[in-house]
Image (cartoon, rainbow, N blue to C red; front, side, top):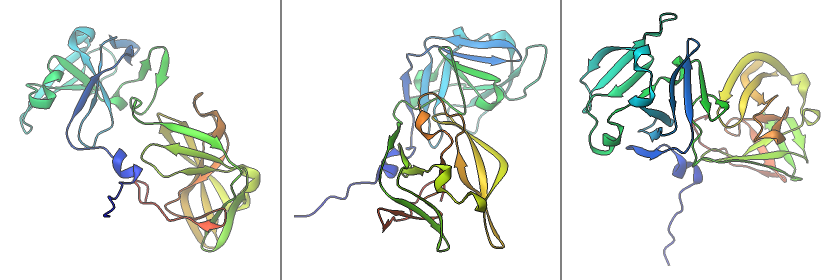
Length: 261
């Protein structure tokens, strides 16, 4: 009997072609220059090809007087209209945009616009501030304590070994092994200023790994203050499975291919 190959979870979860639009049940607010730009209980959550999700606001829920229309771009089927700030204070040349004539699968975006996430000073879902981009309701992050033996090696050297890791499962990404600092050779790590932001876990800080004359930059990370939903990984360290040799219960794990490879 022929077997049907099951796609890997990471392949299933990758951003797909086309657009997907749904109504969000959350109240969403966007702030710029100490003013509320938009406040809506009927935003659309929109995924477009190879883009993270975005909130689109009905124009009726946007303070349009705080925006000034720029130019129309005609190099896309629906055309693009961009907007600059008009708050009387700080200027953002590209603050918002919309489709001039959305059609086909984009037709529900008629009468809506979206803001460039990083141009906005603060975003709130209900009364909690959110970062990076809206959280995808179809992505999950789960953490579980484990007694499995995890060993991390680089160039044949053991960097970390633990029988008390926390395993983090995130939709579309490899399992991440978070290890207590006491089980990591911290003398090989050098703290750096790099900080990244994740909408599902919080702000991550990084270390370089130094082996002899070779330095592996931003090789190890930790969440000193993860968001309240992910408390188990606080101050634990994790490595890129894509770049190290990880042994789980003594068995070498295959290096995954992911956006971090």
